[in-house]
Image (cartoon, rainbow, N blue to C red; front, side):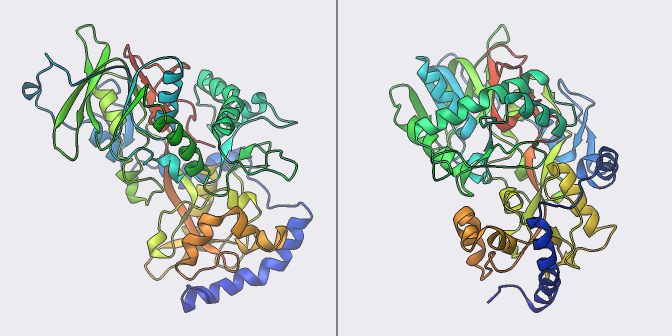
Length: 476
């Protein structure tokens, strides 16, 4: 029995009425035509939130003064520090280390492990628990060109094209060349990737890719990445000290302007700690919980732009903060699931996006910003969205196609987390489609770095989603 109400059940019949014909076309290897480059540009300009003037303004202070960005981001960059400098005695310190890593998600933990392997003493401070991060929320996979017929060259071209040619090329080169090495490193640490019966990696297409290079672990890839990184770091107590519930609130600079540590705030004892470090690395993740333009988000509760604010106050340049990724398929029903990521893997397995009439309206694996624009267009100007009882509007994602195309049980095997998340609300996604709409997913821009992760502030480094430049104006 479906958890959908009577009105939505009626509209599901439209999906079912067109499914047989769509399945036949899919089995022939045919698909809905992709947009031309001119159409992409037109639809992005008309429908994507990044291209709208409302909700955006120039930031009034700092290195990026007068640059236009979302109102919510500009406001936090202009905010006043919670610290009274007169109340902090910097003549003594509470902790001293070689490297202070601020943030303990995927990027922060990987950085701590890499530094420890080189013999450095590391303190890793995090606002919540070790691993509470957007990395854990990631589902569909991690891309690397390590298969026959692919190469970092093709991966590079896809990333540059997906970012609308606005990426920092040195960062894209570092990302695509290092990706196969990272996959091997994660597997060596114990990560359980999806594999063929002969032991080869399973890979699938992602949006905007010319080759299959998406490596996954069911639909819990990020959680599996975080599992092995966290386990490894917590077994390196000789080199890595982890401080949970201790967010950094300000970066410290020495008399020469070099990053030399940070002030941490213990959320449990309400105490401030002074940490002196030879270098500081910020890896605090994104800004989804600012809910830009009132969009729901896939992000965890700690994603509140802390890192870019601290770096900005220290004098770091920011890049591309006018660009935010809205993942095309966020859940909008049931209400308890609103904003929940519906991984791209669902479309990679063959599920199609459909309007209220049960018809396809876009190529299912356009770059994410283009796919989002297509859905917003269908729900606005075309007026073919599917309404929910709470006043939201979305489109169908025909997940039952997956079992039909690949065999019974594929949904439960390949998408176990998503199956459970919907089943608890009496929706069996192997039998009925999901309702989706774009959801705020990723901070495309951030702290500007070079290919050594260094910022323009001496001694200050950054990694992960908090950085800007590698993805340009859109992340694949």
